[in-house]
Image 1 (spheres, one colour):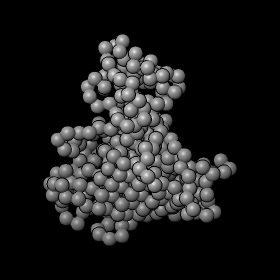
Image 2 (cartoon, rainbow, N blue to C red):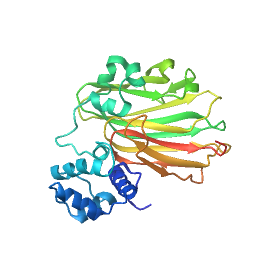
Image 3 (cartoon, rainbow, N blue to C red):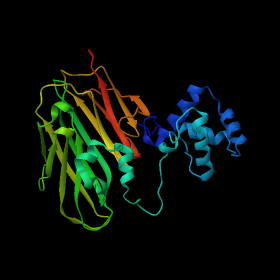
Amino acid sequence: MPNALRADDPNLMFATAFKEALRQRGLPLDHVRDHLQAHGISLSLTTLSYWQSGRSQPERLQSLRAVDLLEPFLGLPGGALRSLLRRRPRGGVPPHDPASLRGVYGENSDVEKALGDAFHHLNADLRRLVVHETVDVNEHRLIDEIRVTVAVRAVHDDARRLTVVHTLDSWQTGAVDLTVPHGPPPDSRFRPELNCVIADFPFARPLARNETAVVEYTLRSACTAGISHQHERRITTPLQTYLLQVRFHPLAVPSKCWHYYRRQLGIKPLSRQFAPLDGSRTTHLLPTKCPPGAYGIEWQWTDS
């Protein structure tokens, strides 16, 4: 498949939201240009066109001021567009920031309750580079297995473990098995009252700064009650690549699937795109240079 621009690519979330806001307000680009000009900001129609197509994004100070002015003009809440801009930090990896975790999970989230004080230091020594998840939906319409591969880089010396938190469907609580194909087993604990499992995966040896490691694990559920409708991954720091594959049993094929991105848990998706199934009843999501947020695939059953 050629490298085409895709509206569901997180690099184009700003472009998608900007274009949709223009459409809903019925505003041509020359009206936008004139509005900015009236506030002392001069941008060409070509620049604005590039913004809405995803060919470029606002980066300079004047362009960022323009985005702030455009949000109320387009009937959007403050920060709705600016938060979608892909950040290009200079001088290396940005420092660990607990506020960015809350930016994805929200205030006083179940994850923060589950981790306690450790939430503020969650994987502070690491940066995820690549995440690959394969999700199997069985004949009962339930997610019964999730296989995960994570590549990480140490940002400080003596990085010793990767901590993961998986939020479970309510019917899975207490019936999940977590295994690794090789290496030391994780230290895992279940929080049934919060519907989540937490696991610490120790590395074979402490990592020095800039060293990389790969962690593989599988979550399996023995539940037979309930119905699954989606799977999503919460990304709290910029990620190079995220690949999510969802495979459906021949006796449980959904009528439609979509992939989506939302900036924070509990809010409406900023982007939602139809995701067709292939010949093996599999659909996938493959964004690159992912900003923080929740990425997922949801599906609809014929009788629901």
